[in-house]
Amino acid sequence: MHPPYVAIVANGRLISISLPPQQLKLDMNAANSIASETGDFKPARYAFPDAQVPQSLLSHLTGIYGYDRRRDVPIVSSGGDWVIAEYFRAGSHIPVSRFQLLGKQVQRQEQLDQAGKTVKIIEVGWARASSMGDSDGSELSALDEHPAWIRVFKVLPGKKRQLIALAWRKTRFTSAPDTYDEPKDGELAYGLPNGVAKWHTMPEFARAENIDLDARSLAGNPRRM
Image (tube, rainbow, N blue to C red; front, side, top):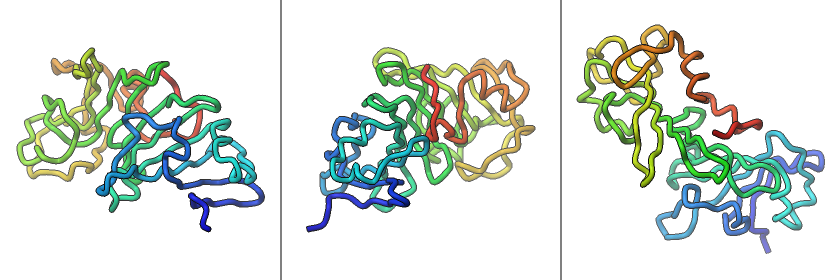
């Protein structure tokens, strides 16, 4: 009988494991429990970038809870690299960071409070500066004079979004870009929704708003809001 997981091990260590999420159901939450076309939950993939996890845990999987861990869930069945990725501290079932990734491309970053509630959302990808939704490419043919590359939203009661900061292009596109055509820093201005520039560079903007464009917090040492 096959075990209910697929694991990668090396030198007595568990490197990663993919399994039905119900096997580690205490890590499931509304944002990371994605249903498949057949109604089942999509598999969860665990990795341990900042922990030494013994292979012996394969005989009692809930022991994984005792380690810092990254948890990825594919968004669609055909997109194994398109995921919701979260980082959990050892002994906790509340994520300290959450991203939507396509490969290494950050599409969305959610900043979470101590209870795991989303308090700020960073959307990455070309969109109208006034757009309040995801950067899904649906508006690229109608981008305005100063389209936004990054939009930072505060999450209000009722899950409403309030735009509080953004990085926008200084000039209009002559033709519609792909959603994730990454600009040069010098092509952007960084500031407030009223059009006032506040920061001079991307690193300065990212530090001020705790933006993690490389999803480094998924490798350990994530910061809560």
